[in-house]
Length: 254
Image (cartoon, rainbow, N blue to C red):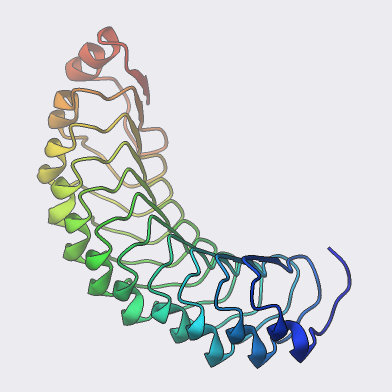
């Protein structure tokens, strides 16, 4: 939170450093010597910096677990990030990304992925290899579809997809058996895949501002649903199964 525009090459001499916070500055580039910080576990270069690229030497940070690169000027997904095999958390929000590198599937230890407020139109099938993933934040992009491999993320608990351009959800959605929260408001959905009846852990389902004219009755079979939001879809009245949900303690908005 200063006005730092450059970092010295001698930063690389701090070889025992484990945490580096350089967010809220005016950085336009990182020194190549940052790759010498091989003990680094946390690197935060987010907010109000002006980074457009990352140095290839970043790939040497094989102990890095938390990487924050939000609010910069990155237009191409930095391929070097896909080589950081120890990453648990990756935040590339509020940039200008249009494509996600297929190599993201290499980050097999990743627990949380934040890519919201970019211009991403599609996800690669390789996201299905992120088997440890618990949260995926993708709101505010231009996604038109999702890969069927998404259904393999059986440990995913939170999937946030609001403000995209989705017309359908993959049939494999039923595989997300640990999903607790699904937010797909402000998309263009006309129907939901029947496989979603398998989402037994789901407590919060937000379907606001889509194009649903009929909501499938199987939603009423979701055993742990606590909140169902159907506003601004063209629906005019609650059905019998919605009233049953309410009697069970679920809050239903229509």
